[in-house]
Length: 352
Image (cartoon, rainbow, N blue to C red; front, side, top):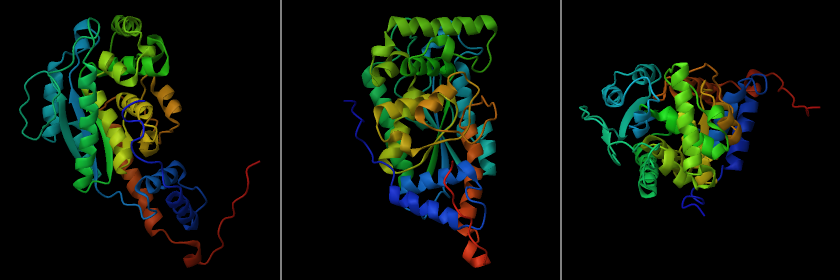
């Protein structure tokens, strides 16, 4: 059995039922806010109460470098990771600009950046100075993978204790669409052709090289026969492993965790394989344009609210969901009821 298998608890069905009744009492067409209603009902199940609280929100951006960049699978080299991580920590990146609009905090976490960083606001949780080139050897040891997962779990606990009630898992790391695609292919039983996309932008030749690298790793390490932690160790990254822990931590500590793009979704999939209750605490924000995203969402049984063909990362897609949830919560909490406005409730009918 995986070491995280029995962590956390399932959703509180009674709280969810009460939340659905509350939605149905609001003077609007039944299920008028669609998937947003479902998300608030799910949050009630995670928090164990229909009195939902999602006011204090944060994006945790897991930053790390990947040795596989040595194989020419990216358009830029690894020095960019440190630069962007510093920008996120200092509040200057895209995710910061977006989160300022919706009143969301952003925390950058160094899980294993290769180059020197300069921001004093970058949270140091380094496992190592980047992973190794998995075309030549496993990216990390199983012990390192577990340490990264445990770090993600501990971070959720820490931020819950600081009063955060809704978190998102974002990432920054050159080469992590390659690691993400490799992990996805292994966990989904798919080929590199089915999972590997262009990432931040590759030429046709670069895309072919990236797919060849991932396919070779699937065969080299016989990944489909490996445990989840072994897959993360062979071809994953410290950022993915850390986010995997964050999704498990959400389940363990009753904190809803929002999935961002493909790399975040890969971590969510890994968490769901490691911990049987983890998927119940996940919210899907958007449908990334990366090839394997739809496969992952289908496997997790989740349907994102946004389909915007995004590919920015950092937690930006998750940030787009936050104001939508705030607006839905406002209706849920303060909307007029049928009784108050003195009109008859809409009736529910069985679907044919």
